[in-house]
Image 1: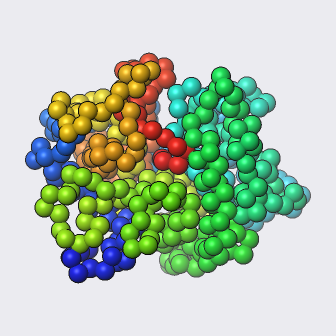
Image 2: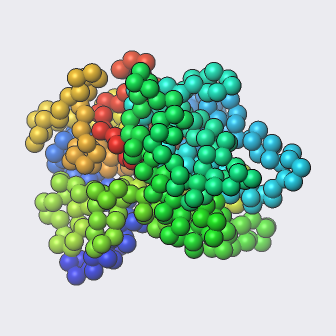
Image 3: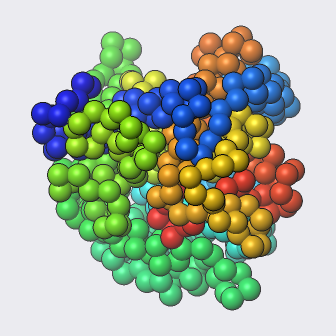
Length: 437
């Protein structure tokens, strides 16, 4: 989109909530990195072959040469941590005296997956969840997912005791910090970062579900998007329902707008969510309002990847325009780039990054210019890594979602543990309030 000084700010705001805007703005930052003009990072293209080789080794170790086995990146993997949970739950529903239709099963999974994603902000390095019944222990993303699964299964998010397997606005409105504290097994010896922020996301989701019946239906539940997306789809000659990724993206961007904290970026009265000013874009920036803003929409991307999978599996839907999806700019993918030397912190940045006394690594808020640069570089480097892996593996059909799942996210976690011990913290810590993903 060609923006000029005369472009109305509301039009700029609308653009910054689209998928193409993420790559376009992140590419601006990456182009400056190639010229050595960033404030906080140096880019080392000579290290990219090492990154590719590292990822190839992980993929071959775990999947051999059958790359069709690689699942897409999504919350399903975390919900099944340690043992299968989703398929047995579907089997349980289908074996009930009055089994639900496939569409209702899909809606239930969308309900569960959306809440599980919203609870997935950084947990910190000390928290552990012990699963009731099995005694299995999980931390970080997996622990948060398994905890969400059990809360959903017990009907915590439903307002109807006769229909526990659902999430609705009234049920979410009842959630309290004390409940989340208890359900997440939080104690002084088992602290979880961002309890208040997580709770506010769920209560704000309640408001969002009520505010957008066009997406979430009269029942005000996340699963209502199934009906909306079906109405936006076309059925091909072979009977496959084709759903535009753009329709799902629009639903999540617009429908979930109320969940964002009021402190996030606002342009022309429009809350933009995960969009941040990037200081390095100030020099030579076009005159239009919002020219230095960089969108990431990591939560929206994580939701989109996660919600597409149950719709594919249960309803056999196909999503068109998947190539517009970007990689996720979070600390596992970005950490891999730092740990393998593709990126490095400049020795003399404009402002020294404060170091955490416990972890010994820099620790800064999400609005810090260094974090904006890091996340923007991560988006573009994930594209470059995916392209390099397709060439190295002779696998032209390898998707970005498969690369995230089998290589970069997993690799970021593994190298973090190798470099910084069992806790596996990132090379730069982002101060989390439970709402930044």
